[in-house]
Amino acid sequence: IKIKITNIDIPVAFASAFEGEIIRRKDMQVEFDGSRVDCAELVQTCDASEIEDHKITVIGPEVDEMEFGSKNSIAYVVKVAGKNMQADFEPVIERKFHNYINCIEGVYHTGQRDMQRIRISIDAFNAGFRIKHIGEVLYASVKNEFDAVVDKCEVVIYTDPAECTRIRHEVAIPIFDKRDERLDTLTDESVDVYYSCILCQAFAPSHVCVVTPERLGLCGAVSWLDAKATHQLDPAGPCQIITKERPIDENLGAYEDVDEAVQKFSQGALEHVTLYSIMQDPMTSCGCFECICGIEPFSNGVVIANREYAGMTPLGMTFPEMASMTGGGVQTPGFMGHGKHFISSKKFMKAEGGIERIVWMPKELKEFVADRLNKTAKELYGIDNFTDMIGDETIAEDPETLVAFLTEKGHPALGLDPMM
Ligand code: SF4
Ligand code: ZN
Image (cartoon, rainbow, N blue to C red):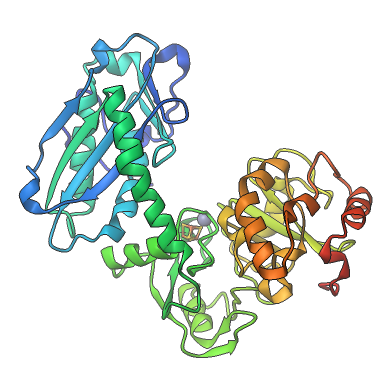
């Protein structure tokens, strides 16, 4: 573990050793909670003339003016300028805020975008820690890590509730929507290159994610645009270009270029990887998959479980049991780790027939993906409300009950060829 210590002018320590620190309610001076009040975190590219480097402004009350134990709004806008800066780098920088703020002793951060949550401990407050110090941390960390693209940086932190509402709804959300839309309109066919990601080789030495517009990294945190930006920011870093000029089988998503890349980046441990099959040379999994899908032989379908799900699946396995078969950077046909957003992708198990193979998901996951998944099912197969045909733990936890439910609903997987 790399312990990074940067000299930042704050009254408490700053080191990655504090990253896992949790602050309980009884130890907390104040908190900020994007799920209850208006919050946002944002990187905004500006013209150099609009930025005064290292200027930190707090608009609204400081921590000493907030009621003890209260829940407050916060929105911080990190303005950056640099001749090599691009809007595509904004989300890559933003995603690091979580690490930066967590490295502060006595401060805890989870979430992102407009859903972040921050707690400041009583001890940190008594040591003199204030909102403006969050600005110092963000300033120093961004300048430190992104010096290749950020020449000037200024931080504005809003705690005034009306200002937070304005920043969230009028500034941040439209930017987040625009980013998501950009990704929505990209397809695997519409781009010239894919990207590898080997960030997880510290834990799974032969693992390589191949990231495409329609298939994000299995951790759910690296989209094709993020991988592209990561490559531009650090050309010798974890994300490398994979060309796609020599297809072997486009339905499987098999390419000579992809095979060569995974051979190289896995140091020879992998020979062939397909992008769209869970049966033939599926992509490997490290350990940080958001979800795992596994073949369910009685229905010719697949069951998907997400990490948060603690119960039983119709495979007779829990998520940790499925994970023990799937992780470690090896290929296990019939089981595959993937991100939540991949579930509604037109490329999900395309080689085996696509999303119509999905027969079961935990209820919460089903609700999370419903809008997007139903849209894809309508486009691909003309099925309305496809998620109504998919089982969950309230319907079935064993294969017999599941198949009876699927039969009653006329689920399309029952009519497909067996996968093995
Ligand atoms: Fe990169 Fe995420 Fe894949 Fe890890 S799981 S290698 S971070 S894309
Ligand atoms: Zn991983």
